[in-house]
Image 1 (cartoon, rainbow, N blue to C red):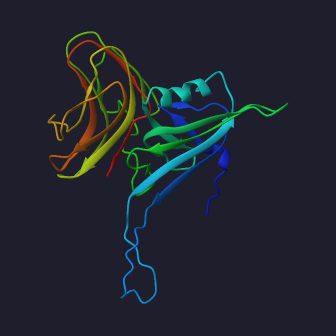
Image 2 (cartoon, rainbow, N blue to C red):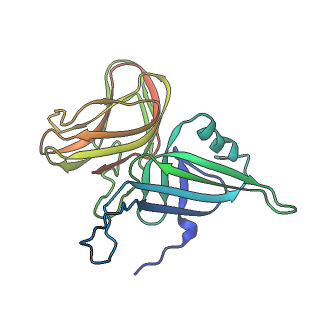
Image 3 (tube, rainbow, N blue to C red):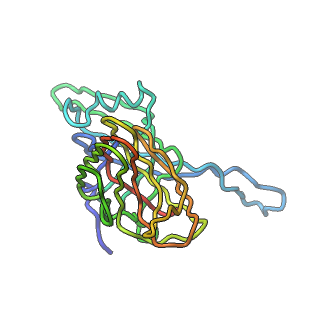
Length: 250
């Protein structure tokens, strides 16, 4: 069995590494409402209740990178983020909100921070059974005036006028199934893109969703059994980028 060095597991918010991390802990749990009766033979019985996932972290205080100041704005601004825990072999990703952040300043020691995120909905572990379907964001087609990628992130997509499309590598879907897309959109100017599943005819094989600036956690419901790509589409001038793109079956 392969061992994992805990140093390799790092926490990212909206695609940016939280600076100077020391530890992180990801927890999944559920409530177990009591369902014990006189017929339980003296043993407690329970129902499956509400589920939740959290990520606790601590590190050194930083004024650069994704700093304490930046993390505080998730609380003061009441905004969510795309939270990613990566480096352990299987990414863990989902939309999350910062529950708390503390700053410590011990005498003659490095100032530190600690905090906790709570996921809105599921924290998905993209393991071998539920892999990320995106390996190449522009692997099939691209006609933006400028498009650059870095791994599974689109670092720049510029459309000067008219229609523009970028299509990922292909993957298979089944009618009625669902693909969850999680990423962070930075909209520099113009219109946000629409995201959908597209086959090689090309025909749209899911609902169309107009993305929003910031966190996007989008469910695409498949309308046909087909080989498709993840398609980002603009119909007018636009300038945007995406953090790492995660698309997986749910």
